Image (cartoon, rainbow, N blue to C red; front, side, top):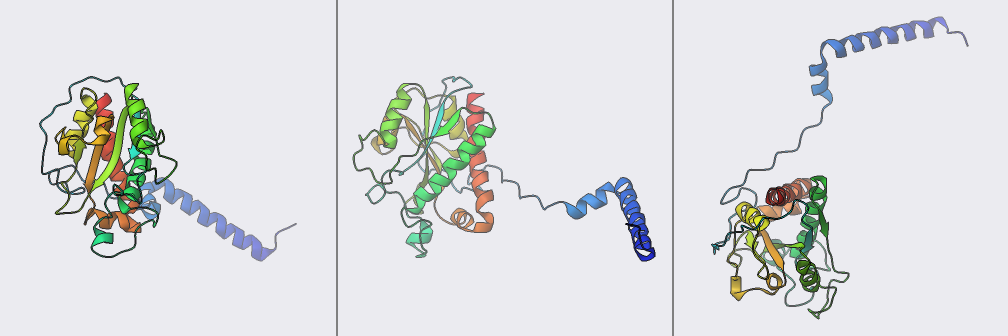
Length: 264
């Protein structure tokens, strides 16, 4: 169909404008890119003691050192603490927001600690696999398994997997102050300590190996990683939808970087 005069002038104007835009993109790429690029996410804060993201390390430090070498393809299994003990005495901390501020739990089926343990577990496995780690997750099929010796529990799985050489890392959040101790690794008791234990301890802090006389998890091969006390300001960042994803990624990055360093 032939163009009408008005259409022809309009199309010519459009072509001229397109040519000007193309020339602008070629001559001024930086200015144009600044107009369309998205605002980058804030970088994760550097580690410290007290840590700007996670708060203080454990107030009862251990003196152990992990020296054993591990293979780069060490199988790492990440668990969420209290994943099989909801509605029981060992359900985990409800956190400051629920206990003191009377805010609703993140998920009514579970304590807030387990909710965040699960979120960090997923993040660590996702980021770890992206970094090439031989890392996977185990989550029990039920939130309440009263029998510790049930083969589906974290403890039972850890005992079997640790015996065949897998590294078991269980994610936890500590109670809020004054009940909590702070961040740090409570290492496994059933095996010699290795470079992964040491790397995690340097990043998060180290609890005594026989903390509280030796906990059930470490006796079965679990390294308990207390991420932080579940209290403000970290808890606020986790609960706030606008900062949650970035905060979880920063926590996951800390854990994964320590694991990568440990197997390197």
